[in-house]
Every structure is written in structure tokens, then in C-alpha cells.
Length: 437
Ligand code: NAD
Image 1: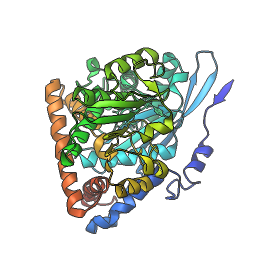
Image 2: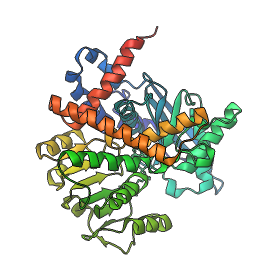
Image 3: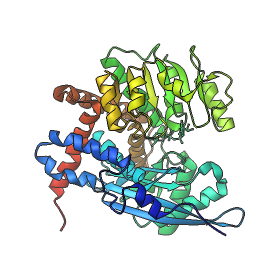
Image 4: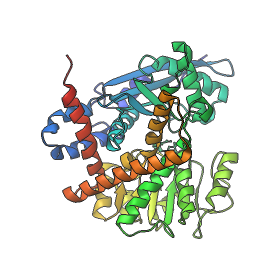
């Protein structure tokens, strides 16, 4: 029996008919295009090249068939989008989630272009994904899916072409399978083809924690500028995985009180502060927050109304829409997830004087340490965790500082300032390279 999980036609409809570049397409690509439009007036002569940001360089849609454990045949639809290669090889994660669409992967690849340029890494932007529920598959099935997907996108990835990494639903094990599959296909051991690998396979110390650590650094820097110390701050975190869970832990280690957390299985609150170490242990054993005894269940709606100092969306995009933006009661939103706030909601938060540290800055810690991993793999010389964390701190603080200053000079949001700096770098490279042929 053949089980078709997805259809291309459905996907094309979601991204706006046959023209996937339609700016009226539903979120999140439309959000990305709108963010690009907003930055255009700030780009001077480089604005002439702005269309390049609205046209992903390369889109690959692949069929990923496997034999399931019960002997049936299943097909999955996978994507790899290289949004821009102007400043270097593509770089961006691979997502396994039942809601993955081409539209989403396009937007995520565009945000990677912006993020990599904003913190001045020598990468373009790319992203990949497969529409499937990893929880509904055995490890053996996930291995077959990951290997076939890697083989299918093998024609466009490589250590100097495009370097995938983990994202929602993928992890160090997925990267080990990707590295091995690519290596088998090229007849060598190509550690630099992916980042976020296990340490013995050329992974980097500090990579697992890097995104959460970067979110914390960005929040701390924002807090400093508005006289809001992390110590004693009330923190609310949506998403309790690699980004949200680790960010919550580091906040707690610095004296903040994490008063509410939410994941796919539960929404929990405790006015006295949740013991994050215990909650992480519970998730490790049970696969989700549901049933954690150290906090009380609250409704999903109440979660967004809680009074906090820092609110960290660290799950998926499209979480803060206009209606929610009107009600949120926080001082700083620090976007751990990619694309959690729509442009219309962004405007409302700005009007309400709620500071937003945008995804393309706040969660750049992960790709920054991925860059360190790639550099270490090339030189086969590995740094200590102290060196990695010190360099991460230096890059995050430097980028935050430049973006904060520009936002003050131009009187624009941190998001627009980040997009200005990034677009200037990408479009200057575009102009200097010139158009081929
Ligand atoms: P993850 O799979 O480790 O964790 C995702 C978390 O979100 C889980 O706790 C899950 O339960 C929760 N979640 C899923 N659906 C939810 C829902 N409907 N409501 C509430 N919670 C829900 O993924 P991650 O790596 O932590 O990524 C989270 C976000 O951060 C994504 O937007 C990702 O693109 C972004 N990001 C990740 C990295 C990285 O290095 N992992 C880097 C930059 C950005």
C-alpha cells in the first residue's frame, strides 16, 4: 500500500497559486516580504537590488519514499531552499514537522540570509524541511527518511555549497545520519557538510546550548539599555525544546524567575518560579511538560496575559498576531523562535512600547556556533567551551550594540535596524559580484 503524506499541488496553493513569489501569499513568506518592503526606504542606492531578496535563488522539492516498519510504502515531501548565496555558502536548519510547507521553508531561508548577514557570518541563507510528524515514526524510520532526504538534496548541499543544521524536530542524531549519508555518497568523510553534529563526529562544544545562550545574551543586552536587570525578572517561555528550555535554564541561573512555560503538551505556571532543571528532566523522561508536578496547568489564553518582564516565544512562527499583541503584558519580547510575530502585530507592540528583540538577532547564537563548528571542522582543530562561549558573547554583543545604535539613529525598531544592516551587506555583495553572465 502506498501512503502519500502530502501533495505538491496543495502546497503550491498555500503559497499563492502557481506563482510562489506572490507577495499576497499567506504567512510566513508574506511576512518576510513585508519586512523586506519596510526596509527599502533605508537602503539608499542599494534599494535597486532589493528584488533579489524576494526571489529565492534556488528551490528544490524532493520526494522522500521509505518502507515503513510495517512493510508499507510512505512518501514524504521534502524541501531545500537556498534563499541567497551572495555572501557565502547557504546555511540553515532542517525542520521535521507536520505543518512544514514550501511557503514556510522559503520564509525561514530568507530569515537565515538576514540573520547570517546581521551578525556578519560569511554565509548566505538556506533552510530545509520535511512535512511529517517525527513523534509518529520510529527511530529506524526517521533514519531512513533522513538518509533518503539527504541523498535527494545531495546535489545542492556540501561543505562549500550549503550546510544544513538541526531545527524543530531534528537533532544531533539527525545530523550524524546526514553527515554519514553525504560522506558515503562522495566517498570520504565530510564532517563540514552539516553542523550541530555529536561532538565525536566533529561537533562543537557549546553548540547544543548556543541558541538558548544567545537568546539570553540578547535579552540581557536589551534589559541593560532599558534598566531592566535579568536578576529578579519575571520570564515567560513558549516552547521548551532546544531553544526555550535552555534559555529558561540560563535565565534561572542568572537569578530570573521563570513563571510560566508552554510546550505542545501543556501550559504551566508557578508564581514562585518553576524549577527549570526539574522541568527539563521531566521533559527528557516524558517527552513533554504534561504532568510536571512543579507548576499548575493554566489555559493557553491566560498564558499570553501573564504579567512579565521578558516574554520568550521559542516554539513556532505566527504566535503573536494583532489580537494577542494587544493583550500581552510584558516589557520585552525576545524572539527565540523564527517568525513568531507578524508585521501587523509588530506595529502594535511598538505602539504599546513593548520592546521586541527580533528573531534574526535574538536567536543568531545557534548559527554563530554552527559557524565555529564549520571553521573547526575545516581546520581539524577544536576550541574549548570557554573559547567558544567567549567568541559567541563577543559576536552577539557586538551585533546587538550596532543594531541598537542604528535603531536610535534612524528611529526605527530593532527589527528594521537589523534588516537594514543585513540587507546592506547582502545587497552590497550582490552589487560587487555583479550579475552573471
Ligand atoms: P525543538 O523541537 O527542540 O522545540 C520546539 C518546542 O516547541 C518544543 O518544546 C515543542 O513542544 C514546542 N511546541 C511545538 N508546537 C507547539 C505549540 N503549538 N505550542 C506550544 N509549544 C509548541 O525546536 P527548537 O530547536 O527549540 O526550535 C524552536 C524555534 O527556534 C523554531 O522556530 C526554530 O526555527 C528556532 N530556532 C532554533 C535554533 C536551534 O539552534 N535549534 C536556532 C535558531 C532558531
